[in-house]
Amino acid sequence: MTSHRGTTQAARVIAVAADIAAGLIGLWILMYLLEANRANALVSFVQDAARWLAAWSHDLFTFDDAWARVVAGYGLAAVVYLAVGHTVAGRLRSR
Image (cartoon, rainbow, N blue to C red; front, side, top):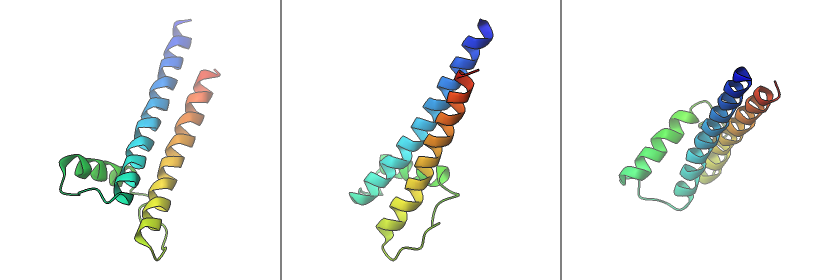
């Protein structure tokens, strides 16, 4: 019973971490589209965190419009974090 509880807690941690990563990336997309002030400390923090989390998908697409590159590249990273995180969490829970 204790091992099942540990597995459930690990699954919860993984799902929450995936949600936080996707949330930060989604927040950056929203801030970018709304032209948030990049000199602001919060905006700068969110941008840096999103850039680090989405480093593998940053500038993956070559759309002419910068907003489309941001939405597609960062959006892909957010979806991948959610899909992988929740898939792993679900498999841990089903053990």
